[in-house]
Image 1 (cartoon, rainbow, N blue to C red):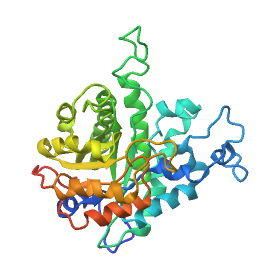
Image 2: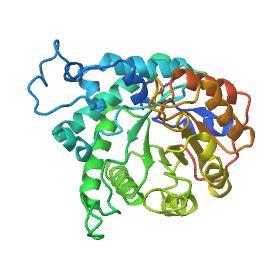
Image 3: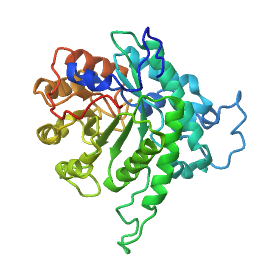
Image 4: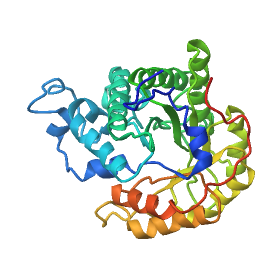
Length: 354
């Protein structure tokens, strides 16, 4: 059991399955979009001048947002709290790229576990600060896809070539999972999946961890449809994507990022039709626009109206925002769907973990 600052402690994630049946839950918005607002320099990413730990690290590390939990933790905590203040029930750890595979790009693979532990601790502390008996808050351990793909060749002249193996991904994800758990997450979120084989490596590592430790937290799964074909990058339709991973019995299954809510609707409707799990949707704020302050065009009013359309039609159980969304977007989404009933889903096995 773990105390969350309330009068009664609760097992990690235990309340979520029932809450998903009672109301539409709110996920937070973009971390990267909010970090961009700070206009951090290379020195800021290194933590200079107050933190000399990474002063001599070779190569540029600006843009390594996961490192900020070590060098600028106050900024990350503030962003978490802004989303919680906006009404988020669940916030994501700042660990989208905090795997050794992803951190190799910055020559920081050795820091992956530490990043995950600290990031989880920051998110957990923010949740405890904002939790009330009426509205508990939850920290989701964000597990991103990595910059590499196990299904697709990086060489057009060699279709069989791969730049990462399933076993390498599994080991990297296992390290991340252990760090997130140690830091105190309530659940895991395998997200922005563009390659189902990558996702299977993460989910295999999760299952191994659960079996070996006897701890089992809820798992959320979210893929990304990359174009109007209605397929993820490795070629699956949303129905095939669901059928490939449904054996995991996720707490939620859905889509995020990519097309924005307007173009995402038919795929969310398809998942709502076939899934026996809760359905999630956290889209970008429309399509990218580099001339916009956030990099995306949609205002909170536009995004919330589109997401509310999903809720009005009974398609979703969990909504939030991805790239280009801010606390204002999340507040508008939370206000819009507050009057809507959650989608009914029937799987009796979606229960609190034992």
